Image 1 (cartoon, rainbow over the protein chains, first blue to last red):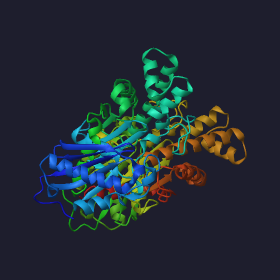
Image 2: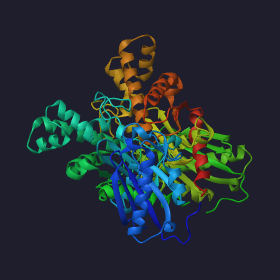
Image 3: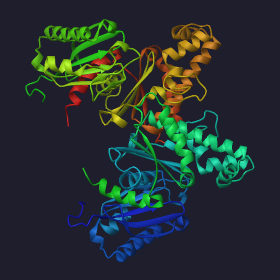
Image 4: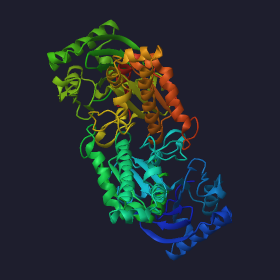
Length: 311
Length: 311
């Protein structure tokens, strides 16, 4: 399948999460011309979700006065693990009833356009790297502080892939040797301590409640809350130091719900780690805040549908 | 400068360390046709070292019955930090009197051949990736356990470069939060614990002597030695886990003096870390032993002189 030569360079971006699916028509400048979103309701079946995605794309096309034939491609960012090569979703954590489904084939068949599946963290990183906070950098690492800690790595404008095409999992970097156990296989990984879940779990144990309550208590001067936040900041320092000594990107983009509210706190920790390193040229890595918010997934998935077709 | 079209595809590989310089003529199969080595004697001046390198290359050419015009290029691997783009050596640690010298220009002038400078750990990784233990893998991380812990990363057959063209420093991955202070800027990095220097320093503090004595005492059942070795193995586990969740290479090559004598011990630790990960496909990364020994630097530097000229 080759890209449409009279294409207006529109692409579809689809962002699939455990609770919500968002669909948008995106132009070559990363602008969303029309968008729709609806509940994932994974338990009601995969076919129903595909049908709703198809309907949403058609609605977006109608709203923006375009036709299916004008689409350059379709990009899907989905809560992982996913297999970009097989086009399958293998996510027993937040999309359990869909385990192993092929999302690429039905959409490719329906629209007759090149269709690509990526991890949602990679899609968001593509969005920020091309149209957001990572703009202008040759290499970008994006860390998304949400329920977990998602990561996307772009090197020379491409999604970085490790052995067997799988992607780095920076949320599972070791940051404490004796921290809480994680499903990844070790104690004290970055996500187990600095994610929303990690902070909530420490907050509950301290009688403070979830992450939101921990941050509020911290602002009010609570010392137990301060210790939990400091631990998350120290996890950030260790993770950023590690990123500096492995992938060594030009920009580290911090995003996600926790960062939306507390960027200054986490940026100071991350920048401190970068500045402390004697083995890297000073100022070689910039720490910046994500700017696209929840548009990053749609915009990045659409952009990847373009990039993946270029040689 | 373009490669000689009637070239026999011979390249010069030069391996510059704090104590020794080795020079070889290498064919396209990674075979060393002739080699010379001599003491670095950095304190006696950089010009003298360049003159000795030039003489050694000419001797090697004479011995192998070749001419300068048959050389495809010259590759230099040097104890870093070095600047591949500027061609300068910036190593205040083991080549202090040469700080800031340009090694590329005089050799390029003398031989009128394309000349490339790389970190010695990267050169060794190129050697192992093309002609040694990393052969056949698309991505290779090499860890060299010597006085320090050197690292070289190859992705798709190319030396991986981070921001400002500098290379990953895997020896300075954080593996203990409260370990010994390192010049890199943190406490408890991989090198501070698992390198020859790290093991020697722990050995001296325990009254056991240097790394060689620590390993001997460990073999004899000494519990203090066992604790020091276990700490180095745990550092290896954490570092390998980190590599698995960042660069995620197909092969991890272990090399250097400590590995020559104790590969099984360190390989078991490294493989254990790979196997424990639930976020990577099982078996996606292999841990193997370096096979080129001290030839890796010459062979890799020569190979890089070829690779760097290919588009």
